[in-house]
Length: 179
Image 1: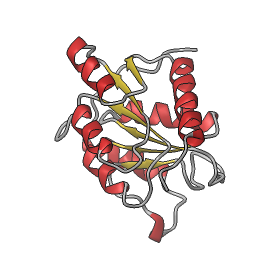
Image 2: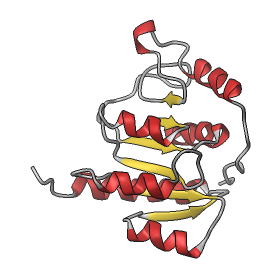
Image 3: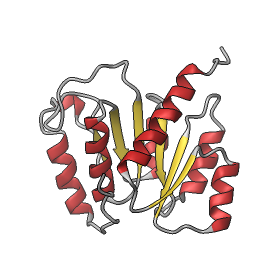
Image 4: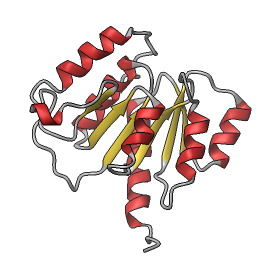
């Protein structure tokens, strides 16, 4: 499979346009906030999604990466949402906790490691797959110590990422709950 594209810097205006395209079929009450794209509902990028399908969250400030991963996940029949801000993602946890998080490390306002630390405070944290363009041994060790199930360097091989997501989701759904 062809690797995903390398990160590409885009302006906020470009992201707003990409988000508008992604949600143009949603009704006025369902418009997502700026910085979020979704493949959880019927929209121009997908047909109706089964709510029992695993939900994957993508947290990356690079719009091109978010869009490529959303497409890849759609093809694999996953529900998916992307967030170009770790803050927006944390706010979304009040609505629902995803079955898996694909997380970039280098983001403005909060690093992926800091976000991973926030996730570990949840009663039942989702599995995290870290993606990064900067593979630093100390950061890798820290992410894995915080429970990352996989640490991948960009550009990412789609098959490797999908295999990692599938294993993470299967493990989470088969794990006993604390309830």
